[in-house]
Length: 172
Image 1 (tube, helix red, strand yellow):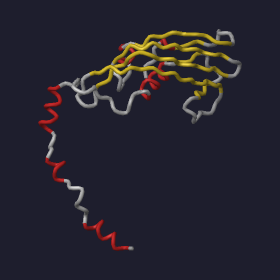
Image 2: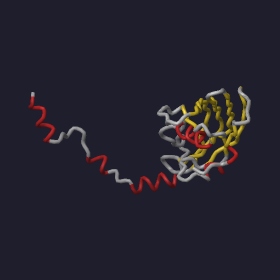
Image 3: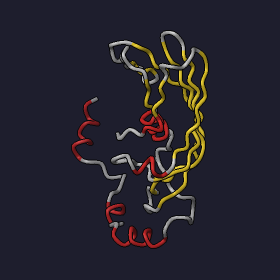
């Protein structure tokens, strides 16, 4: 992931306590990512960093819209985003298996939150993203209907049981 300097927070000079940062994620953010499933967006990020002696606690508040292709017609669609999440940054050597804990080397003096923001946006997406009824691209739906073989669905009869499975009924 290409790191954008805008999302790198130097925490070394910060005093212990809470510090607030605001970011704006636009389409340019997603264009820099190779293989991004999100095509564009306009998301406001409020990031609050609570610096302590042995760790950093980051609280993300993200709201706005992102654009992703519709799973049915492949036209871009807007998806509303409103999420909050907390990440803990600790200093150490061993990697953590906890998805909410990021281990930083003791020599670190900055954190890059760009990958965390992208991951949070990605996992907040619904499993299936489709337009509302009658909003899909009609031309694309017509093409799908033209090339999808509907005879396969008619041929498979659920009442027919494979004779090999039928033989298993006699085992009792």
